[in-house]
Image (cartoon, rainbow, N blue to C red; front, side, top):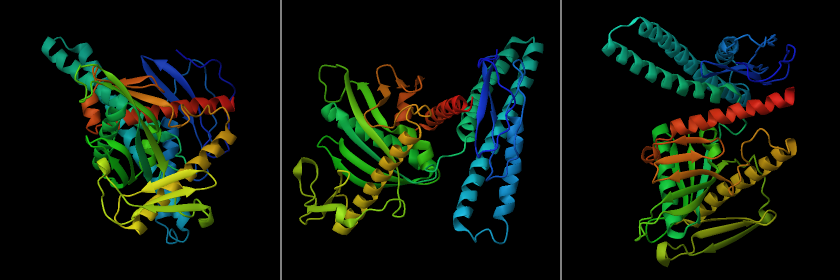
Length: 416
């Protein structure tokens, strides 16, 4: 059943990366058709007439992406490929994205063929034991296809300008006292383990711990491939419902923790006038007020025009702590600048599920019910222990896929 109303006349798309889409609901599967062009990658214009009852898939667009991929490979292998560093880096990133997309799409098509073959076998099978085996294989294939489809959907839109940046994450308890601090530590452990599984480098920039092993605040950088693209939707309030280790009566407590995900800024991205900075130094201290060292090595920097305050006492060197503060400060200012630009461009923010504001509750971790719920997308997962151990890739891919779908919906509204 076609679910998107009447379709307007055929569209010739001439602007870079303008995407339009329609949904068809067929046999319980959501089929996405996208018309896309990319001047950078060399896509030809696409012009299609779509009938209300006509079934279509994205294979024509994938074919053009293969052509674009081959063209990018040709450009990268040219003798003068390194002459323009910015262009070379841009082509390299697009090459990597298209390579991943095409590989995952091919895996999906292979699984779909296996699924059709198994369904045909099942229709002819009379042996009950063999039929059960085939049915189990079908269930596995359907789950694999669903996951691959989510990956394709997350990659098919062009990346935003921050996706390839390294990332600074900040985690702080909000409401709930010591229990919130303990959960902040659990979240850091979750992200740290996930980063290790991705081969990313984690560097703790600043941390303040509590006497019971919780975290009052922590800032850490993540360096690797597409770090910001994968984690950018983690910003917001994370709520936990569980019986704290400090609870003697067995009551379930609700606590909250804020997570900020900042694209790491370079000096060329944000100009900071030294005269706009107030720099204070003080003696670093740890949990319970115990002195980490006896020199004034900790640094606090206040950016006077914006009121942003950053501090670091992670290192024994005052110079090193100042460097850490400036990294975090640049990233916070870049984030604020980009949010302001986005608000001017699209005041209604239809392309975003949330604002990225740290005051917005995005997720609940319900320990008694073994459930994690993402409130922005209405998605739930019943594998809380594994997720808290860092097994969050499937969850993140589903969130990215749903976000991509809503971005496409917003794009459609603008184009029609």
